Image (tube, rainbow, N blue to C red; front, top):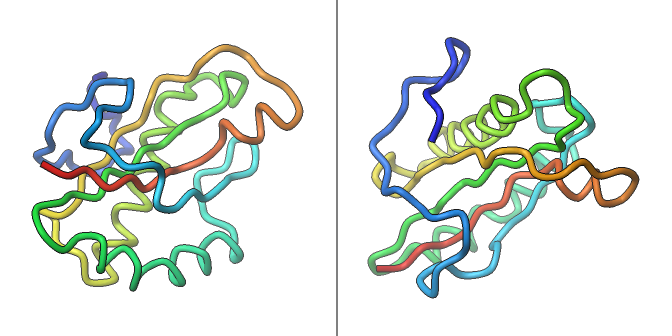
Length: 134
């Protein structure tokens, strides 16, 4: 994984993840979307996260971790990988501010994939919250 940029929060200890989902990962518990080149959550997406908090807390029972996975479209400026990490880190901080403990969270920004346009590009600009179980 690339080193965090100067604008990224201090990295937290996290378990390394492979780019492809493992059997221990569930499908995305929550997905929020972003506008092109934007790292801040819109009001609707922020409310979506707030509404998901009780469900996320329930899913963390047992030995589980919320993996906050940030994604970006390849055409989102000169550094889409940094944008993906920034999105993930901001959602992770939101969860921390809403009572989740650092040990319950991990964040990662995936490198931008192939160029896309239209709906495919919109779908790439997202953060997914995935539950990982041991």
